[in-house]
Amino acid sequence: MSTRAATITSLGLLALAISAALVLYPQMPDPMPSHWNVAGEVDGYMSKFWGLFLMPLIGAGVFLLFLAIPRIDPLKANIAEFIGAYNVMMVLLIGYLLYIYSLTLLAALGRQFNMTLMLLPAMGVLFIAIGYLVGKAKRNYFVGIRTPWTLSSDTVWERTHQLGRWMFIGAGVVSILCAFLGESGFWVFTIAMLLAAFVPIVYSYALWRRETAG
Image (spheres, rainbow, N blue to C red):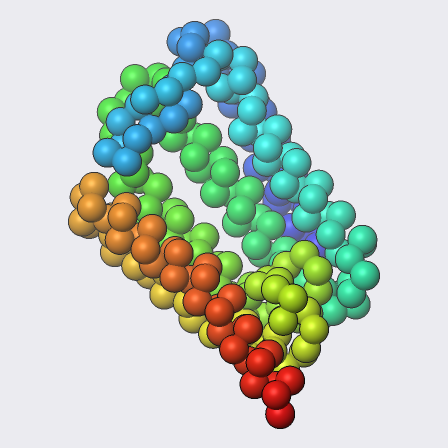
């Protein structure tokens, strides 16, 4: 995806969210639901203003950060090599945030559903996208599995990210399947997520030790 297309799509999503906030403002309760427990039940609230506008503001912040990173990274030439995947990730992450936002609006309007079961498939898609991005990422200081060992070696970076790619994709698939497991699915996904996050870190250190020992 080109940067232009990703920018237009992201701005369109954010404009849609802000428009929804303005249109629905008179109908929303005060306070609004803002947090759910593992069982998918509401257990926290915030004021109507922040309930309606906080997530669009976070999405706008994510959008600006994604635009800035390719310009400020000292290895920005490497980011240019996977900018298409990077742009897809920006749109999907903003879309994910606004998906959570839409569920929050529905809950505030009185719709009944299990938030955990609604989020697991979306988190699965997001993790699969992260895996795709990780598999494409070249060495840089902002995107990917950034450890002292991956940043010190292109070889360690590449091999760690190839493992990380499949770990994150696997965690994403597990998350989608966990939507069918009820409340216990959240804990299965949590284990898969932690493995995806930490196994590549340990692997990168092992690769670095082997490389420097040789």
